Length: 244
Image 1 (cartoon, rainbow, N blue to C red):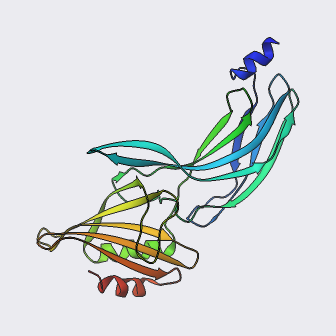
Image 2: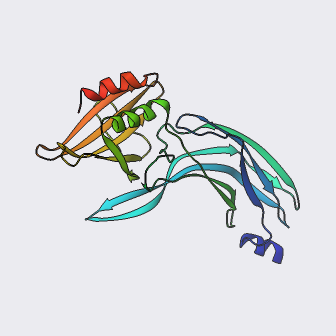
Image 3: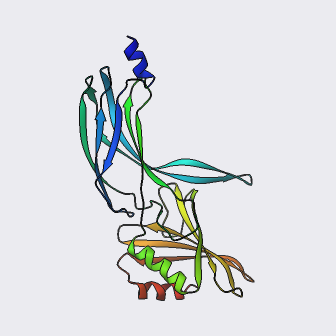
C-alpha cells in the first residue's frame, strides 16, 4: 500500500529515457530513437507514451512580455501498457520534425531559441515520469542560402528568438502557433535600412519568407518571398535583390 502511495508521488515509480539515434536535425527531417522505460517497485498502468516537440515562445500583451513553454507538435508513440515491478521496456519511435521547428544552430550572439523533446509516461493518479532532450536544429539548405545572401548583402545576424502567434503572408499561413524571428542589422553605419527581421514558414516543396524592413526614412514595411526548397544560393540572391 505504501509503495503504491510513494509511487504516485514519484518515489519508486517508473522512469523514462528517450535515446535518440538521429544525429542531425533540421525542419522536416526524420527523428528516430527509442524510449527506454524502467518499471518501479510496484505495478503501474501506463495509458500512453507521448513525445512533445517543445520550444520557448515569447508572448506580448499590454507592453509586457513573458516566456512560455510552447508545444509545437505531439506524437503518441505507444498506447496503453502494464509495467510489472522491475520490468524494462523499449519502444522504438520515428516521426518527422515539424516543418516550422525553430532553428537553433545560428552564428548569432543573442540566440534565445531552444527546442527539445519532452517524453512522458501517462500514469493515472501519479506524477508523470518525464525526460527532456534538447535538439540542435540546423537551417535547411534554402534557409542557409538566405542567411548567407543577407550577410553577403552587408548585414549581420544580431538576434534570434521565437514569438507566440501566427504568420500570414497572404498566400500562406503558419500552423504551429509560434514563429522564429532572425534579426539582421547593416554593417555599414549609413544605410537606408536600420533593421531586417526574417521569419521562415517552410512547407514540403517551398519555403515562404516574411521580411520586415525597418527603414531610416521610409518607415517600416513588409515583404513576402517564396523560395523553392531546391533553390541554390544564386537563385536566392536574385530573389532577395528584387525586394531590398
